[in-house]
Length: 235
Image 1 (spheres, rainbow, N blue to C red):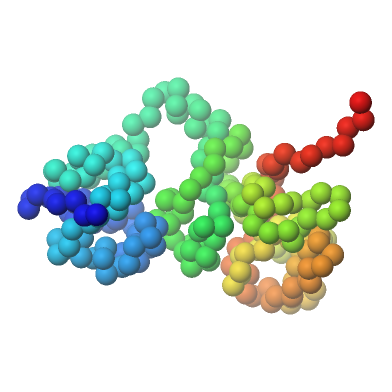
Image 2: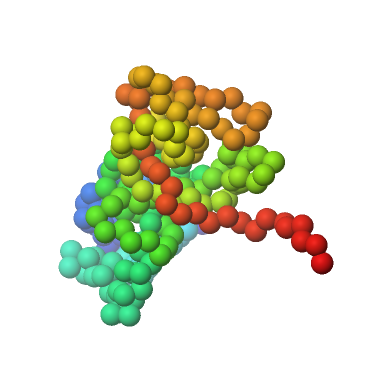
């Protein structure tokens, strides 16, 4: 289903302004909203009309009303206000429970491509967690497999780990952490000369060895949320 826009629709103009304001490339923006880059370019240039579900996605994602998005050209100041209309109480709540970008299974592959792009990080899904961020970089990571599970429990899919960015060189002993290289792995790390051994907790999962020079980011856990586990309690 397509929505017929008025000839003077400002969707494309506003879309381009939003993208430029957030320093997001057409490719990044298209991937965030699950579009082809060519389609996004056509919208920006007014050569094509978006489907109603695409308009709704953009409106919801950037917290802008559909009416504002379509019917008038929004100023830079207005676009900035969409992210800053927060009451005093909400500001205090944000300070106590800051927004932490979360690497979910749906965006894991995109994170590997755009982990160092500010525009992508800013528009990642997030969790609000009682962590004192300060100037530290913090991420959340959704466990996606059984690699760190064992007969004593461990970690399971949909558990969430809160992580703080760190330098692997600061640690000499075994340490639990998230490594970003050509993949994302949350495992126990053991350093061995110029390599790192990534050890799983599950006995059926083999260890992985990677070169230290291939590591793009390293994060250590500072908190976690585990889904309910069935407990055997004697009554």
